[in-house]
Length: 227
Length: 227
Image (cartoon, rainbow over all chains, first blue to last red):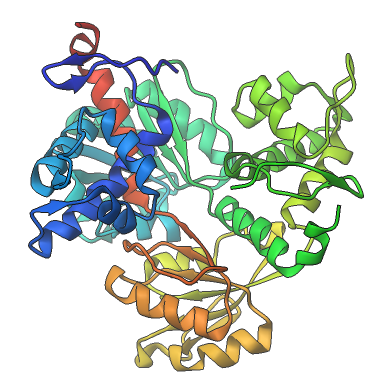
C-alpha cells in the first residue's frame, strides 16, 4: 500500500492509509451530528471525542486530506464535512445489489443508514426460485439468473453478499462476471476475487470474538499480571 | 496500549496489538477449514493465503502467541488452532443478550456462526411491550424492564444492541447498569461507556463507504495519476 501523498487541486493523489480510510466515515458522521447542533467550528479534541478516537490520531488522519484546522479555532465544521464526503465519494450515487434475501438480507434491505449516505439498494436477488416476486419495501426479489441484466440496467458497482457461506464464492464469481468491482461480504467465507475487485468482510462472530478476547482478560486479571 | 510481551505458562501476559487481536478469529476460521480437509501442518504462506493476509504479517501476529512454527515444516494445524482459540477465549461459553428485535435483531438471533464459536444467545429483548412473548427460534421476546433479571440469571457479559440510533445510549446505560461489560453496537450512534466496558461498533454503512472510497478511485484513475 503506497502511502505517499501529493496534492492536485487540494486532493491527495496517492493512497491514504487504509486505517485512516476506515475512520473517515466515522468523522463524517460525527461532523454531521455536530453540525446539526448548530456548531460552526470544532476543535480536534471535540471532534475526536465525538468520533471516539484520540485527537492526535484525528489530526494525523485529517492531515492526509490537507486539513490542518486553524490554531486556536479548530476546523470549520461544514467545510471539513464537505472535504471528507468528497474524499469518500458519498456525494455520489451508488447503486447496490443485495444477494441472499434471508433474515440478514432483509435487514440490510431495510437499513435506514444506506440511502442517506448515497447508497441506493436497486435490486434484491436470491437463488430460491419460489421467492421470486416477494416484495420487500418497494423491491421484488429476482432470481440470480437475472443478475447480469440487473447489474447492467442499474450500473451497479457494489454487491452485498448475504448468502450462506457455501454459496458465497459462486455468487462472488457471478458478481465479478457481471462487472461488479466492490463486494461487501457477510457470508462466513473467504472470497477469492481477481485484482481490481475490492472485498470487505463483515463477520458478526469475529466482532464478538474480539469482545470475548478482552472480556476473558477482564475476568482473570490475576493471570495477566503475574510474570 | 501496552504491547510488551512476557510469557507465563506459554501465554502472552501483556497486550497483543489490537490489529492482531482482530485477525486472530480470521486465522482460527482458516485453520478450522484447513483442518477439516485433513491437513496436519500448514506453511505460513498457505495459512496466510487462506486467511487473506500477507505471510509476513501472519508470522508476526503468531509470534505474539509464542508460535513460530518449524522451519521447513510450518505450523501444526491442530495445535495452532488450540492456541488461538484459547487466546481468544472461544473455548469458553459466552452468554449473549440481544436488545432490539427488528429485522437486524432477528437476523442476529438466527445467525449460525455464533453458537459454533461459543456464543450462546440467551435472551431477546425489545422496548415494544406489544411484542413480548413473540417467539424467534427457541427464544421469546422479553420487555427491556426484565434486562437486569435476565443478565443476572444467565450471567451475561456481552450485550448486542440492534436498536435505532436514538435508543442506543439508553440501552447501553441499562446494559452497563445490569453488569454487562462488553457491547457490540449495530446502532448508528457513538456510545459513551465507563472505563472497563468495551464497545465494538459494526456500522454497515461505514463498510459500504470504505468500498465507495476505493470504487471512486477505480472510476477516475486519471485523476489519481496526474501530479
